[in-house]
Length: 205
Length: 163
Image 1 (cartoon, chains in turn green, brown):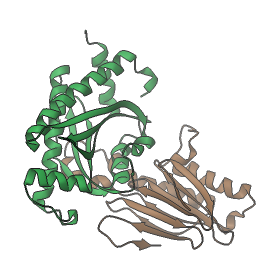
Image 2 (cartoon, chains in turn brown, blue):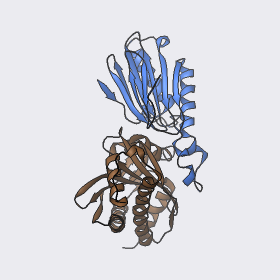
Image 3 (cartoon, helix red, strand yellow):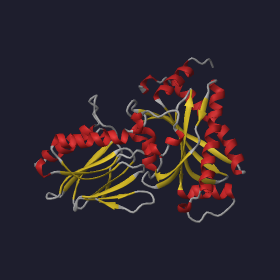
Image 4 (cartoon, chains in turn green, purple):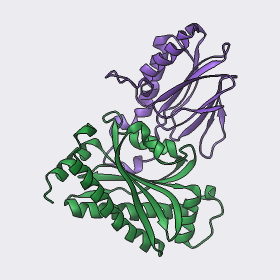
């Protein structure tokens, strides 16, 4: 698909959708952490596939990632990326216990992170589903501990053969006043992106 | 100096430089001439440059030709060039369990297709492939030392491999 075909109206709508999604995700995230937490949308943009790794700071570091698959009217990948320190912090917050070393990530700790991705991702999508009157289901979350660059590369490679650009919803996390070093990306498939844009275009405001 | 090579990019450097990149299903192709202390690294994403994309470093075939062009331009004999490659992970294996609905063979095999295209490209250009560390289902950070021709490959929770 060509990004030049995306109108200003569609871009604005995408930003509105992202903001609504983040609002809903905030509530879910706060309930999950039992503390006021927020998810801030920092950018909604179309980026060349090869530039996506430039969006996570130092991409050569080891990170913890949770991947969710979207199916239904919008297909694609949702990816959460946390620095190892922030992942340990989240486990401590939710699990109410000290995590000394992330290398010793046991099943319990992994599930806490998977569930975090699941709760925040689903909340984001729920608002999108309601706003656009569409249907999306998500897979069970998958946990990956690898280089940030390798994980993002994997996520864009799926569509790189058919599309040079990826739509990126980029967010940052905060918990109370602590900045959680985390990122949340939504990468719809090119086909579902086209139908999403059509849906938006036809929408009366 | 450690020089970073981004996704869909290529760089040529000289001793004592080190070229580095991090790979998932992409492939890092080094082509070098130890005798002349010069080497290059390309981080390719896709097998074939079908549409004449000007970003030659993005595809296996055009990245290999471009690296060779840069060497021969400065008078290096292509017969003295050799290659080592790494990457091409089948990272989606990890997500197969959540992938029961979607999952074209293309996407599962993109790492493999990349590797085949790289091997084919090197063969066509007559460049000898002397070592490869590819496939599996994890990311790799590679550091290529031009002075020695050694490639150090690091990955999560594993001992570093030197090829």
